[in-house]
Length: 193
Length: 119
Image 1: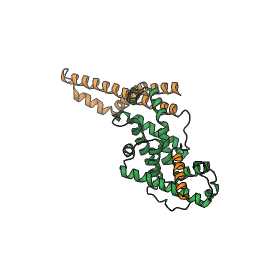
Image 2 (image 1 turned 90 degrees about the horizontal axis):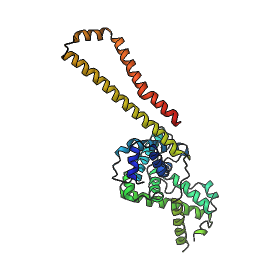
Image 3 (image 1 turned 60 degrees about the horizontal axis):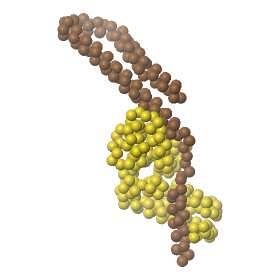
């Protein structure tokens, strides 16, 4: 079923069509919200909130952009609002600016990185420590394969900023993992030669 | 040479990690849960909309009837006004009761019936 038809069905009050829409886009919403919020306990509630917003505002969807882009925009805005609320309550340090270059790597974790899978896990943890804008663009670009233009539409960031965030995020992650490799002096990348 | 090799490997590892699914999950029946919640909300909004239409029609009929009585049948509007002001509490209570009965019939009962079939 095409997105236009799906939207029309939902607007006509077809509950099964909405169920289908949720199943189709829940992975996208989960990735955006999960990466931005970073706490499993809150992810489900926020994802629900996103789809309720989608339902309430669906009549405003004109089909100018892809439905996935439109839903991702709602997910992004809902997650940002949630993070800002948390920040106001002092529950989380919301870091929009990069401040990680040069940050010392946790030595406890260093000791554990001896194999490829652990290196991957470590990198995934590192991604979670990146500023929220970096995590968002990384997820949208690499995991969801949105174009720069679509990411611009979703986040409202200029294309240049998106490119810069992507490149800097990569640089940070690469720098950190290489630092760990040097520290450990182990050949954890043997499988990648 | 060694540096180049490490960089290449790191890029490859990074690409793999960036394509890996984050470790967040949703319940298996998430779509069903959300659709049910939204369905209930849609039903509620629909019933309230219908109630408001009924209410508007009833108020309209009463207003038109009162207007006709005043214009064509020369009803004594002063007597009506005096009656309404002297029995304000009773008139308000009767109106409230009628609106509540209409609301209960058009919204509450239907909504709870719908909810009991979907829960």
